[in-house]
Image (tube, rainbow, N blue to C red):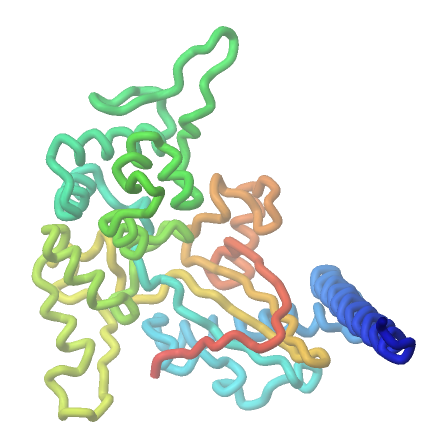
Length: 356
């Protein structure tokens, strides 16, 4: 027979367990409510603490410093030139922005997928290991998917009439994500195995080109592996300039890497289509600590209309953007177009560094 004291002890343990569980749930709910409040505060930019206004103000100050630096230096070639941390470059950070951390990152580390030409697509897909026939078919299917006309390529496919409606499978625009590329049945079959795992060639393709923008890659920031792969595919000539950029000819361990201010050999080198000597897509991120969390906001800007604008020229908030809005944004920000706005909240500020 179980003693009464043992029963009481068991009940007490159950009660304590329930209280602990309720405490965890209440803590999670409170944390969730705080996060939602902070995010709403950031989006609205109208709050007692002015968090959203501070973040937006810091970004505006960063853009101003960026434009001045660009005019003086006649171009932006790498964040290590000093413009990557505007607060350090300025003689004094505005007092109303104290506590806000601001960094500018070069996002043109890969060429935009839209810059690849028809001939280059064949070279790229054949270098990936596909046969000429497979490469030609996938190329035609993708280009019919992208272009704005209804002219069907030899092995491509356009929308077909289905009664009074049209098959919406081909959107006739640039893909907004790789999942859209894989939605093309033939591409999906070629890129994934029977278990649904992406094949190495397809995974590598996603690392070579960006769907975030339509701009060339910056030769000062592009990964050397990308350059060497494109050279193997015959897309660009031998990239001897990598040695100059990476400081191979300098003293060992000197860390004296050079910043190239122009394309090696000019356009005759064949780099002009996919590469540039300047940073043409930037991400400006402002963050502010609120309690134990960091509230952050960032804008993406592209030079002279080279950005994707979230696909189909949409505005950062997802609505349709007019040409007048684009022009006003570009003129207000020294020729840079606002292509996206992102915001969020994190417990620990994300580890992001700028190469020096």
